[in-house]
Amino acid sequence: MLFNSIDFLIFFIFVTTLYFALPHRFRWFLLLVASCVFYMFFKPEYILILGFTIVIDYYAGIKIESAKSPGARKRFLVLSLIANIGVLAVFKYYNFINDNITGLCNLFGYDNHIPYLKIILPIGLSFHTFQAMSYTIEVYRGNQKAERHFGIYSLYVMFYPQLVAGPIERPQNMLHQFWEKYTWDYDRVMGGLRLMAWGLFKKVVIADRLSIVVDAMYNGTYGYNTIWVIIGTFFFAYQIYCDFSGYSDIALGSAKVMGFTLMKNFNYPFQAKTITDYWRRWHISLSTWFSDYLYTPIVINKRDWGKWAVVFGLVITFFISGLWHGAGWPFIIWGVLHGIAMSYEFLTKKWRKKTMSKLPVWLNNTLSQLLVFIFLQFVWIFFRADSFRTAFKVIKGIFNYENFFAQVPAFTAALKYSLVVGFVVLAHFLVFEKLWRNEKFQAMLNQSVYGKYAVYAYMFLVFIFFGSFKNAQSFIYFQF
Image (cartoon, rainbow, N blue to C red; front, top):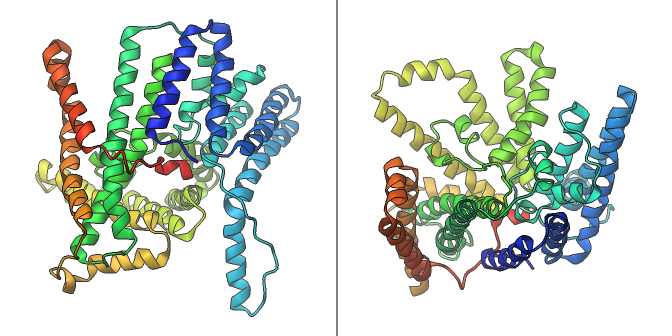
């Protein structure tokens, strides 16, 4: 069983009330216990997996720092990485690898006798594995002192607001915060609550509402009429954005209420004019993790290759990124397509700049954003589809122009309602997000109490009337 957004809110209120009621010296223990309870809500015994890697990494960090020789420091780092990647490989990739071995064996007329494992993927495994790995890597690089307090280090890995879906934090940002004392600050608390409310709005009103239409399209119940498929893929773009960024806002907001500062994970990604710019705005904590620990080392190692070192680094990094998101070839194709697109942008940067400069600035910006958004919708088909077969049916539906004006499927009344409401709430979201970025609008909210509460009241009414409470779902990225 997984937490949905309402469950998280109730849990947060209970924990935060206790947090401010306790003396500072006991707060780390409360947060650690709360994080354990939060994680065990899914599958209690899986807390042992986290415990195993936490113990390994805690002692590895101390040994790396105290080791006398570079060789010894590297051995303890490798031990930590093997433990983390090993757990990830067994629980997330074992059966995927076994499936591919079976396919190869069948191709050559052999049987595969390697047994399959009947296991459930631990919630958020990829997230806290990467966060744990960043600790030992940073200690090895000399950028972070090894944490001697076992409870504080455990809390760094398990801090419940961002435990299962990020942001993927770095030790330099988080560890010192668990030692610092935070008092009740009205402005900070209200800022955190507003951020949580906005995240909850994006999840319950936008993502969960759009998911009804998206699920119906990908399930193929109504066929793959072109217009129907285009609506479904368009809705999924905003579903996954509002679902994931909504969780990030809730995580950042809930941490902020208690005094902690988490890194920003989204920066209006659909405003991006290139795929490269998009990855500076989308899932920032993951893209910077890959950049620091995979892409940059690859490019430095292959620097003799010139510009092709960048291309190689991009394709390999996004191949791994696709695999990180899911143990399946559709995820890998999703990642590789991003790597190819960014390689194209890198290789043609001068030509594109020269060509696009001939257009008016407004047209250049509009076309660039539109092309990026179309590309994203296309590759997200592989991300959302449960198989290649489904993905190709959706793609065929998009490009089958003969059925573009074919009769629209006979939707049920409930689905027709969801379609209409989907467009209504999406329009509200686009307006709200644009206003939230407008400095004059923000100034008006700060200066006018009546204006501020009028906006809040209107958003609350939209939340109540259009929120998808019966269709409440866990966050999409919990599965990674």
